[in-house]
Image (cartoon, rainbow over all chains, first blue to last red; front, side, top):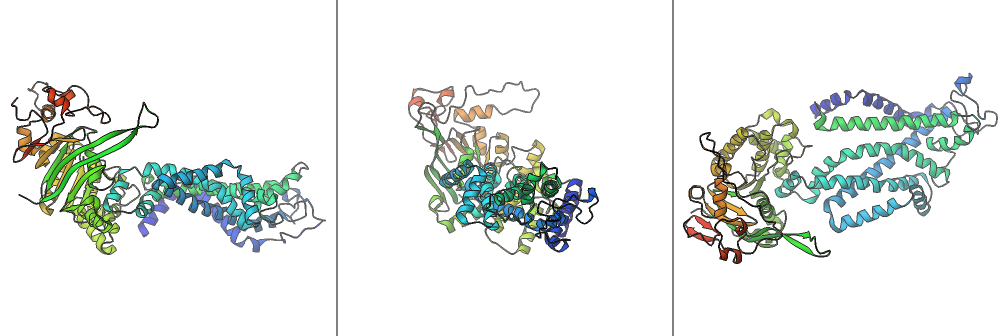
Length: 285
Length: 325
């Protein structure tokens, strides 16, 4: 529907920050797709001669962002890593969103034994220290980036399910739900058409914040040797790998991956905010 | 006499509530405690009573949203409570609902055209094009402009929203509309407009209404017959003129006396009923009204009165009904 989309765009444009965030996110997506083809050097090639070189601030135009402790070009690694990091972040968000929202809605709407069961499982999962739980899950499933993503999603699902369930409990008592029931609407119809659209708003912020957490957790799991291969140029892994050199004054190894993660999280967060505002018919003028 | 559409027999709904004194015991909140009435085809039955007397619980039972504790609801000879799912589905097509709060009874995320056609979509009736046409037809019928079809509920005033609700209720061409306080959230001037719309639609589409309200003026204006509820029971049913001219039950009299008269010469001497509505958890023995009744006698404290036929169109549940006061 053309008019609807135009209204959406018009509303979205009113939020300047969100528009900036949109372009930053677009750039990141571009890097994620084409980064590996833009790298000036092989991001995995190590060299003893180029270890810990500073970048453009020290007139090193060969390696504009410097090199890390194994002599790998930081710019190449950042470009190459965009794809890996964003893929991890977005996959985790999608898994968490689908499972967490479904569980929350089913649990809150149907109530009774199902609610009790789901919420007790949620309590159990929430009782574990998150990183430990992720480790256990990866240990049980076997290592690999896919399993690491699944493990991270499992950590975040209970929190989301809780938030969603809370909103569902409010929504399901509203007269329009009873009206739909009286018209003959089944549970599935009501959950999908009435409950879901009305509980999605509070989850958007939670989900956008998850991007950064997911990237960092992937790094943590990689650091512990169960997630991604630490030599792979994932931003989180680069960040944690560079921290040993901080004391030696080689700040660029941690700062540049940190800046990328920061940009990704901030732009997704602002973008999520802007989308929510533009989608919510009530806030339109 | 017109055909009987609904027969409600001895309808009871008791909700469990945690007892204050006992840890593991439940008390029962008697929201409905034996309600009997009939609705005839083509009439408007007004259901009136104070807040918390069970009017809305009665609505929930009739719409099969919650099962009653006891009793029967018979619609056109079939017991609604024992219907199978396909029968229930056709029952839901015939009985529609308009709610009290037009702000909360429309999903804020839906456009008007989708709101109005929701029942059609649930029942899988017609193509998209047909539904849209039907929505426009209904919007015109309830007095909404066509160009509002893509607007969202928050863009409307209360009266307009109630019109949307009415259009939605009419989408399936129902025979019966249950309206639960449909005008109590509206301004007085808008109330009149919406009530007139109800009347006009009834004439045009040959509808039957169960009209729930606490406002006696509204009830007087719209109803053919009136049922007065008190504490989960019906205390008096009569034709509207009969009830307003000749109320028999002391509670009905008290209600009628409490209607403000718009006359500045008339001294403000509203006779407001003393005391409070007893808790529906510990209902009094005997007649539920006896603690507040001016004319209660010993019998009222002991035996609960049954609905008695006074004349053709007048029933009341009072032991003293035949005593002229």
